[in-house]
Length: 411
Image 1 (cartoon, rainbow, N blue to C red):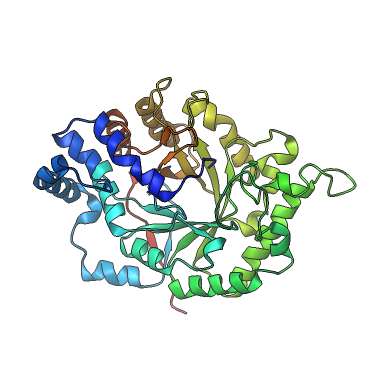
Image 2 (cartoon, rainbow, N blue to C red):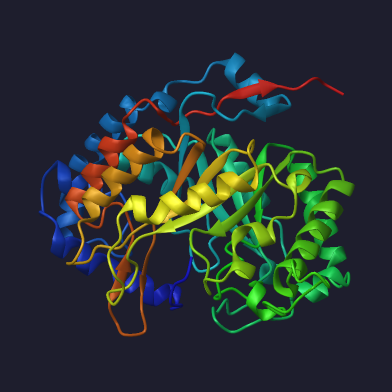
């Protein structure tokens, strides 16, 4: 996902004022949007606490996941299990604005989002940037205990996490050379100790030109073989990806499923930079992922779901005929030239009716301030209409809020 970088404080300062300005001060619509906690409570919000709590409790009681867990259910989840790919239906999930490093996961944030959209989230996404040099044990335990599957964007990226700057100390070449093997091994050991199912997405959107692991920074379209059928940029990425997966597997972290995740359209648009050139092979991939974003900036054109998904879905389906496809990131801003509510409604409908291999969709619920001062608001509650569209879409029983678990034999 390409976006401007601002400080966390700047992003938070801009939240409350514009949100309250767009919405009614009282009533269920206000309460539904207000469950995302503002940085400072206004008097109006404090006066409405009892209304908000009553509304949230009512919504939570309606959620399938919020019934009281039995001892059997708890023991089943404590056992060694595998998360199954749905044969019928698809998982719904979200990234919920977890801070600058995208790893500040809170139970309150997850529950507030679920109350707002009216559905438990089967998948919760967060990041593990290499610049943090840690493993997100606390976050992953919280997500799994909430009965959701962790999706981790494991990004070889260093602070201050700026895009369009080229490689940093976690370059693909340094990964291939073994410079970061100790960190990789330690991360793998912690993943094994966590022991629960998780999806790891290494180096997402490598076919773009904004992240430091993008192929354009590693020789790009320079030939990598005499036949000129392979190119240095994609080949370097594949070597790094395989190196990482091989080391993690060698440490016994078999609870990980791996995702190969591209942007829907490549940048630059050239055959050397298309998704198939980066594919590390079926032995290294469990899920195929796509980022599908509509208008994120005011200077961009508006695009509907078919124009954003038709060709990339066909391209991704051609890479491997058997792997499930996840819309690993999707969202759009609220801009005058487009209808965000209709865009969300169309996405949740077409993902399930037109693209049968899509087995999960993870909405990118975030808002940030751009350098020009205006905000890109991808959050589902950027307007009452957008929130209603999302709530209505995920209410379809095709969208699964509960994981399908299969017990594994005890070794």
